[in-house]
Length: 638
Image (tube, rainbow, N blue to C red):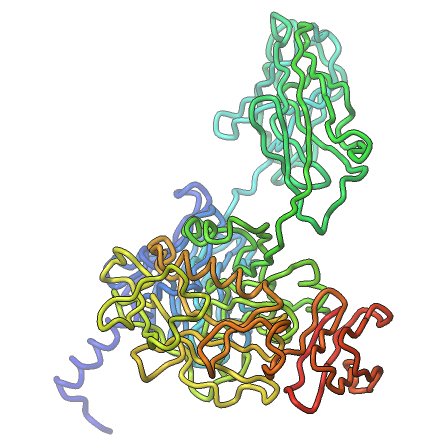
């Protein structure tokens, strides 16, 4: 038998104390209000680990774009980078469910087990999700969570545990459509009904909760004599509630519309006027449903909420809201249809974030629709972007997000501005052999050679240093990382595309901005700018100008930058340019009358022409490939 030396004992103890707590005390969730949410800074190297949690391999903080919102709508400031070498074990006196809020890439995941049972895998989707784990334990239990199935991080923002005591309850109490307030601690029910309500014969609608199976008294009740006791029971335990029901002593004066939608879109209000500016692809004005909410149950409206109104016949709907006391208020509802060009911006949550104000200002000349980067890619990515003149890929979309990955099919089909170099990784767009790189803390600039500063995106942009340094930020905090990002290479760019580098990381390495212009009517730009740590809030005037210029340049189907002559070329006036053939608004422009072949998505030739203007109106909707002897093939969508 081998002996263990004193030093060996000390080493074993030190390892044990690092990864496992000597003693655990199961948490009684009822002592914390029935729910508790644990984020990184509740369980970290700087915060004492609670006695009901043990950890093996405490993960370091990650503050990248995998951050999610908790069930309480609190944004995570850091995540747990869960791997197979990291495990959390939670000890709970009782628990109904565990909610894991995480942004896990496709191909990664978490694994959990309850009381040492079978391990269950939660697969990542490339977007924030609330993974609900049913526990349903009325006795002490342990829940173990670890990274799975790879050693790569599963970014986890929050663990939330909930438990509701199992006892007879009254969960809802309603009279004449009015919901009472129930105090579950004090076991009271209170409701004030409208002026004039007859309190002598009311029939409450009672909803039971917990273990309750019945209640008393049932049926019609007289509340003029004072409070009535309602008792919920499960046959063994009885829980009494005191119900106090009264009526207002004077008529209501409430007559406001608190919210209103037009054709499903939430209208904005200024005073008594509701408006909504619809994108051009939702026009023209038509017969649309108008739904609204009044601030009082006794108020009435001259228009039925949810009914259709024909705005094409009269673009303003007038609604008179009358209070119980006879006073009234008139509202107007006036939708409009925008004439601006449409930008479809793919984002993490399908909305602008608080750090996006400066970014949004750069696109104020356009109608921006924020699109959700769903974890499952659209079945038809062309149809997904059909209504938009320009696609913008926000950097807060995960590089592995399925919708973001599928968007690569739109390069050369629709004008596109991509702000995220990390789509280029292998297994994503697969344009680079090496992973993209982000800038170090406090840095946010790129290098543009003087010969390329004539590119249209640099109009009204200033350069510093030796005259080639392009700064994207003002007052970027010195701790902020990833201000810029760049592709390491484009070695695996599809052969149908030709790339031209516009900006590098340091003058020699890294592709921070580049352009693909094989189809000048569907030009593509990468400008690698990361929003992590709210970087976008520090964009300077340079960046706003570049983004404005980029949108205008990409949306001009007749103009592109000639990287040979370092000049702007208009295809309709320069017939010697190799990219003169392009598609726009149903026509293929062919100024030199070259031999043009059009193929469908299956590779079948369906049209051949040497005409200057080739009409495609007879073609069915879909994706087509244009090819001639003198240009690389390009795609267009009809």
